[in-house]
Image (cartoon, rainbow, N blue to C red):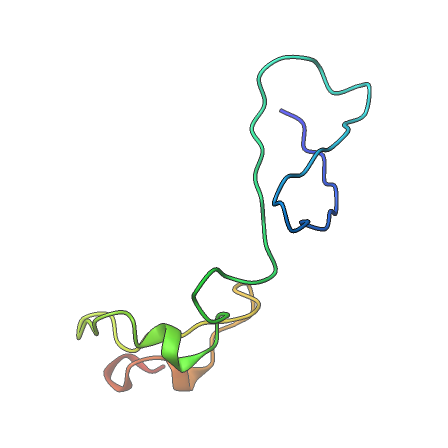
Length: 83
């Protein structure tokens, strides 16, 4: 499977046309749209977004990260699980 990234601006009519390189084979493909903003939901890190989820005492508080690969702070662990 090949991946091809194209940056576009979504127009008011919400229709987007893209051209792919000639080396991308003809046939079925999957198109994924990633938006820099969420529809009707604040961006991650916003407390109002976390408030939409019911708390689960077994999981602890919901923490959102801009970079999910960054190390987790000791303060983000539930107190009984902190290193």
